[in-house]
Length: 245
Figure (cartoon, rainbow, N blue to C red):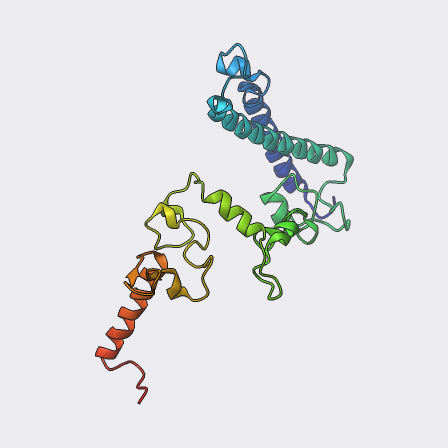
């Protein structure tokens, strides 16, 4: 390790041994975050299998968190011990990929590193997504036909809308549309898709069998139409509307 002085190497060795001691003590004091015991012992239950799995929801969450912390510290400890072995072998301070010396500044920040800055496997965040997401893009995957001009049949989105119409655990506050105030209008595109109508106004204007007694159904389309009309009238009154004449 010619690029490191004896003082620098001693300083790095002391840091590694201090970190090693702290990690070993932390893992031993709490029994690897409780991973050495079964969930039955942690919850004082005769069996973790209950009539309702939700009864153990909090315990499962905490168990998963403890597992992640234990794995993180075990991996850190393995890297520290590997660095101490490289010091004994005389290969410490050189990149495992290109073989070039690692700067003292980088070693001071990450004493256990085995890579230079250019070849560190943690220099970027992977943008790769699970292959299953190809099937799910766009929403409803290849079963959604709304984006195709040559298709107007029953598709995956329509199937979901039928299921959703029976009710979900969502509230109007969680609806896709920010102006939803009725549970009946919460379905995806509930106020935009016109089942059985050609023009939007046909969904809220009706007559009797003789074409008389016109009435209005104040549904979502009606409210949207009235809101747009009031907006245009407001612009006309201020003289900002377009002049057709």
